[in-house]
Length: 355
Image (cartoon, rainbow, N blue to C red):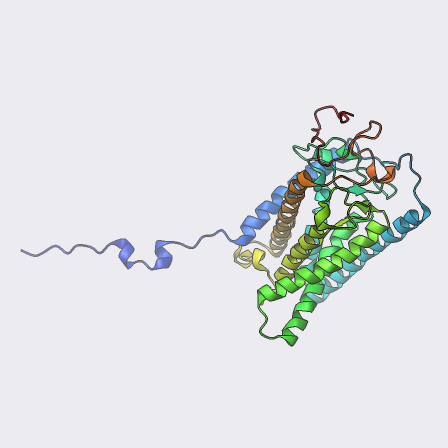
């Protein structure tokens, strides 16, 4: 009687790739999906804000000093010209390379986080802008779940901060890569971690320099800080040291992404884009969305960190009306956030502290 041969298990004859087919989901899918979400969200925010309460916030009772006015009309055009310079640089590189220049992805993506600029005030106001700057108020109260009362009073300066987001991270990314190349010349064995840490320090110091120019010009103020971790604490010129550290980290992340692109010029979050069976324009759109997702995710993390820090701030110094803009309330001498001051919700009336 002939013996019956037992068939070998199908899994035993398949290669590992056949047993577990490779995932079709790549970083470009995840990050572009995140970017699409934020693109839709901010489109809703901008439209709802422009349709309801986009109007200039005024300086209040305190006169704006002449030197502050001069600084405003010097630094606003500088930021606009810097953004125009970056656009020209990107346009020339795009024409030379025959495709959208990689730095354009950074410029577009971080211009797309402008709506989060004062997200730190989500729970309570801890950052002020000068209402002498060209402004139409802020989109803040339209952000879902916004808690801080009077959030729309902050005079978001669209000629100062708006253009800044378009050029800031492009400039810092270029500086980071130039620094990294120099470091590798001086120390060929330096690790990626070493380059990153040097970038955090260098770009953090550069950020401190640039921000303090505007702080001493009274164009904005870090009104709520942890004094022990801040410079010039207790004055309107106070600057939190952790701001320089955070900016150094964020800009170095962008710098590392820029530095470590593959031979096709694609970064880690663009992996998988060449495998997509779509046209060039569709691939470019997905790459833009991916970077929009990355930039907005980074700034959500930043906002959450500052909201948490806002629970532990020290008493605020006295600011003039063109910086407070009734963000702490409209009563006479309302209490600004600090130790012992309750966190007021946007759906409850503002009450002054008991005498």
